[in-house]
Length: 284
Length: 284
Image 1: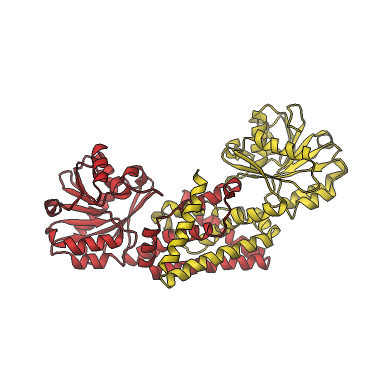
Image 2 (image 1 turned 30 degrees about the horizontal axis):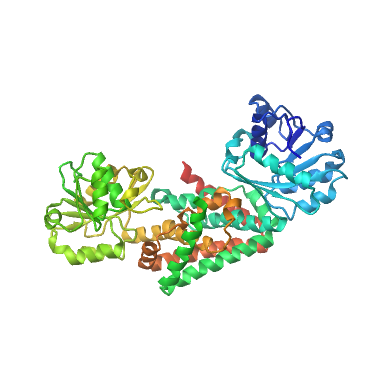
C-alpha cells in the first residue's frame, strides 16, 4: 500500500513535529487536515499554508473518514485520546504516531482499537530544541532517520504504507526495528545522551563558562535544553532499557577513570582508538 | 606591547594549529617563518602561501632573531625542545604556546629559559578532528575562545602582547585565567567531554548504529575521533584536575540514575530545568 495523493490524511496534535509533517505532506501535494487543542495553532497553520483545514475540537467525521491519522502527541495524551475516542475510528483507517518510546505505548494502543483499524507505529528521529507549529520545519527530516516499528499484529500493507510515509516526508533513511530493538536503541542513542547532557550541565554553576567553552562542550550540551515534562515521561516509560544503558555507560566511564588513576595509558589509548574507529563509520 | 607588523614571528611545529596560526598572521600582513620536522609540510605551506619561509631543521639565527616564537607542539615535545635548544634563545624574545594543559608545562618551561626570554602561555580553544598543515584553516578561530594563562613571572608587556596575538588571530573572545583555573576549566569543559564521548563509543559494537542515530548522538560523539597519543598525554598531565571533574560528573549522572530507578520525577525534572536554564546562557 502506498500513500496515494487522494488519501484523506488527518494529523492530531499540531506542534513542532505535527506541523513539520503537515508542511512536508502539503509540499508533496497531499490534502492535510489537523486537529489540535489551540485555535491559535490552527489559525497560524492555515495562514501559513501548513494545513488545508483544521479544528481546535475533535470533528467526528474527519476522524471517521480518514485513511491515515498521524498522532503527534505526548505518549500519555495519545493513549488517553484513543481510550476516549476510539469509537470514532472506522474500519479501514490506518493510524501511526511519532512516539519516542514504543513498548509502553504500542501494545496498549493496538488493544484498544476497533476491528479493522490498524496502528502501525513509527519514530521519526528528528527534532529541534523549540516547540510549537510556529517552529515547524520539514527540513529537519532531510538528514534524519525514520524507524518503522511493527508488531506481530501489523499487516504488510500497513508496514509498506508507513515506510512510504517516511520516504514522502523526506527522511534520509527508512528502516525497521522490533519494539524491543527500538526501545533499546533509543535508550542508548537518544535517552542516554540526554541524561549525559543534563548531568553535565548540573556539574557547575559558573555563568562565565561560555567564555572558555570550546565546540566540544557546546556540542555535547546542545540537547541539555530539554522539555522536562516530555523527557521525564519518556524516561520513565522506557525505564528498564534506559537504566541498562546508563549502567553500561557508567561502567565504561569508570574504566576510563580507573585507567587515568592508574596511568594505564595502554588501555586508555586502546579505548580511544576503538572509539575513533567506530565513530569514523558515522562520517562515511 | 602590541604585535607590530615588523616583528619577526617564528612558528615551531607546523601542524593543524601552527599552520592555522601562520595562515591568520599572513592574512593580516605579518612575515611568518616556520620550523617543523617534515620538509613536506614546509613545501606545502610555502606553495600555498601559508608561510613566507620555512625549514625542516632548526636554524639558530631564526630562533635567535625572533621577536615572538609560537610553539605549536605536543606538550612533552615542547618541553624537550626547550631543554635541548634554550641556549639559542636571545634576550628580548617572547615565546608562547598552544598547549592544552598548563600546570605540567608552564613552570617547567619558565624555569629553563635564559634571562630576558619570557614565556607567556596561551590556550587557543579551537581545533578540528583532522591533523597536519594540509588541514590548516584560520576560520576555526572565528567563533572560538582564546585564553591567556600568565604566572607571577609574567610582565604586563608580555600579557598584552599575547592578548593582542589572540585578537590578531581573529578569536571571538580573549580572556585570562590563572594556571589552576585554566586546568580546572579545561578538565571540565574539554577533557571530561572527550572522556564521555570515548566511553559512549566504547559501549556497543553495532555497525548499524548510524541508521538509527539522531543528531544528539552524532553531536555528542563528534569528538570521539580522538588523537589517542595527544589526548592520553594531556589527560595524564592534568590527572588530578580531570579525575576531580570526572567524579563530579559521575555523581550527577548517578543521581539521575537513582531518580529514574525510584521514579523520583520531581528531582529528575528539577535537574532538567536547571540544565535547560544554564544551557540557555550559551546561546545568548
